[in-house]
Length: 259
Ligand SMILES: *[C@@H]1O[C@H](CO)[C@@H](O)[C@H](O)[C@H]1NC(C)=O
Ligand SMILES: *[C@@H]1O[C@H](CO)[C@@H](O)[C@H](O)[C@H]1NC(C)=O
Image (cartoon, rainbow, N blue to C red; front, side):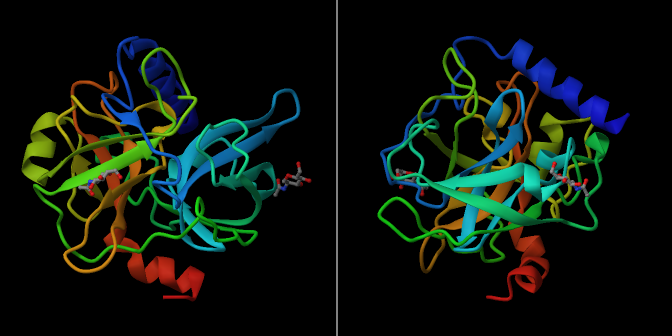
């Protein structure tokens, strides 16, 4: 039943996204600008591999995405991640990486009214090779990122299509939980789980799901502050809500054994 609910939500958001909407209001990324960005793909014997979610490389053998990407199946043999993509289909620098393990956060709840608590998963996969187009991103500090400008990236719905043929990005501010809660009066926005981006004019949509919000850090390189959890159904009237990665650092590092 819960699975059914999710499928319907996705379907509604596809129907309602206006044709003029973009990543929403993003721009095409420059090739190689977001080298940690991955496409999570699932195999279907009828249709072959298809993009289901964004994901982000945190070390060469692990990436993070949303737990809700696996509501239909969490069988690792059905998935791969693809690194080095710019065009979603067939970038020459692409690296196909077989997924061996999917670790869904044990406290994840498929509970829309509470904003999908703990909506995060860690993937273990074949090692990516570092190139000009493939690299890892830092894990975040415990900053709130409130009022700070950050970028979201993905191949999600954009002008006239889904998925977008070329990676897109958009920049806006992270908003605080009170403003985010006000935008979603029927959902419990919780600081521990959620980091909210923008006011809806600029939004993630559709298969941007699972992809990152990337924020500058006061010191050091930009970090992955969140993974896309849910968006306003129209992708135009509310903030994009991300799972706050800093809450899960201990859990992530217990899996990756490398931080
Ligand atoms: C996962 O998928 C593979 C390939 O379709 C299948 O052989 C295997 O039994 C599945 N595992 C589980 C736990 O369903
Ligand atoms: C967003 O990405 C663009 C393009 O890489 C970059 O110039 C800009 O500084 C980024 N914004 C932030 C807030 O990191």
